[in-house]
Length: 120
Image (cartoon, rainbow, N blue to C red; front, side):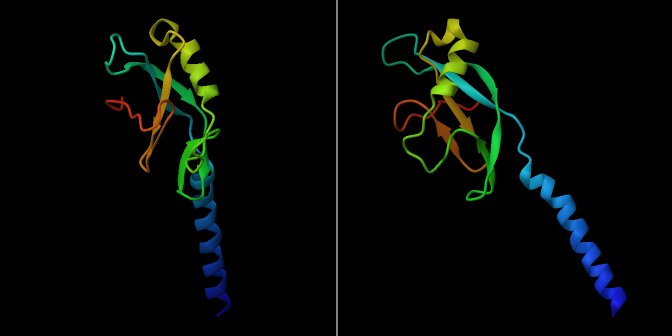
């Protein structure tokens, strides 16, 4: 009986030990930057990607940009707007909209309901 308890507790420790870093550690990921359209009424132009830090969100069990919450409709995208504008000044012309997507969903900073025409 003692041997079985030791084996089971060892298995639990090992399984948690291998599992915990996977949950807690989110990688830096790309966020796409979209500049203003070339003509009136046209689609926004893909300028490139910036690299952002992501943090684990326990509600969705996924990594999201650390400064943004999927549940907050009034999120502040200023940091990502500024990073896009400074990374791609010729394309953004001071009016870039960042967009992030992972396997759970997406977050777009810009006009309400706007989504990129494609995900690079």
